[in-house]
Amino acid sequence: MKERITVNPNIHFGKPCVAGTRIPVQNVLELVKEGIPFSEIIRDYYPDLKIDDIRACIEYAIQVMTVEEIHFAPVPA
Image 1 (cartoon, helix red, strand yellow):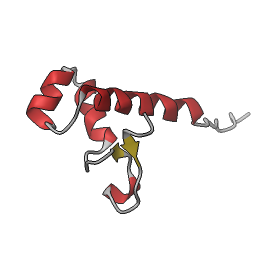
Image 2 (image 1 turned 180 degrees about the vertical axis):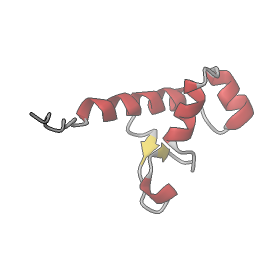
Image 3 (image 1 turned 60 degrees about the vertical axis):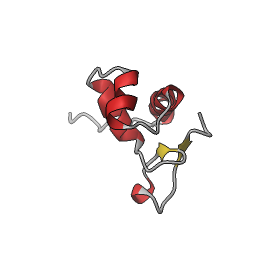
Image 4 (image 1 turned 90 degrees about the horizontal axis):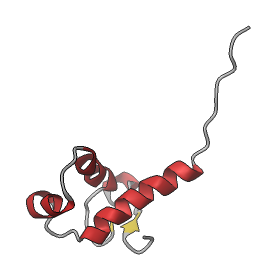
């Protein structure tokens, strides 16, 4: 997955993108969230993507959630 997702401060303000493209991971994930099949995402939105690129976007999101620290505000007494 690391070779498929890149972060470059000069592309989309450093948001993660599919390597070799300017396609943000977030855009791909939004299409997946809508239930659009991978083949349609490639055909209708991003013909430069491969199915493994879409899978890498999902894996990237999972990894971000895995390492994210969650902080709770104290409950008032």
